[in-house]
Length: 248
Image 1: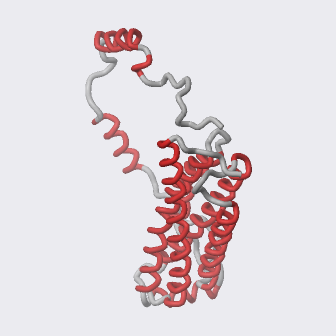
Image 2: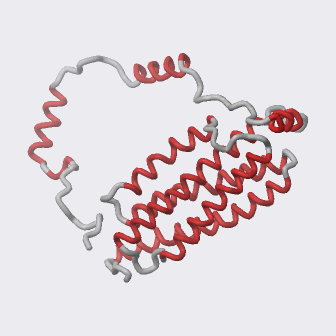
C-alpha cells in the first residue's frame, strides 16, 4: 500500500520549478505594493472586532428547582459555582468527541488494517468504551447538581470547535490510520490536562466523591495516551527505516 511519505507528484514547493520561481520572485520585487504598511492594519482590525463582539454564550439557568437550591448552596463554597458546571460540561463535550474519534479510528482500522506495533481492534474498542463511560460519569455529575447535561455551555462550545479540526482529519477518506492516530494523540494530550484541572476544581470545592470518579477516569486516559503515543512513534520509526508491513 502506498504511504503518504512515498515520493509522488507533490509540486507545492517553489523549488520544483527554478525557472518559474525566479520569474515569480522578480515580478514580485518589481511590482508596486497595492498598499503601504505592515501587519498593524490587520492587528487593529482584530482588536476592534474583539472590543465590539459579545461573548461565546452564557451559562443556562438550573433546569430544576433542586438545581436552583444546589446552586445557592454551592455558592457558599465558591463565589461562582457556574465555573465548575461549565468545566464539567466542557469535559462532557470532549468525552463525547473522544468517543466519536475512536469510532473514526476504528473505521480506518477496518478499512486499512493496522501495522506492526500498531493498535489492535480490541484495544481500540476498549478505549472507545472507556471514553463512553467517562461521558456518562460526567453526565451523572451534572445531573446530580441539577444541571442539564444537554446544554451547550461556553466552554463546551469552545471545546467542540477546537476538536472539530481533529475530527475532520480523521473523517477525511484520504487520511491513513497513522494520521488518524496522530489526531487522536493531540486529543488525548489535551484530555489529560482537562481531567487534571477538573480534579483540582472538584477537590478544592469539596466534591470528593466526584474527584475520586475523575481520578479513575484520568488513570484510564493516561493509559490511552501512553498507547496512542507509542503507536504513533512505532509507525514513524518503521516508516523511516523502510520496515512497514501491513498487519493482517
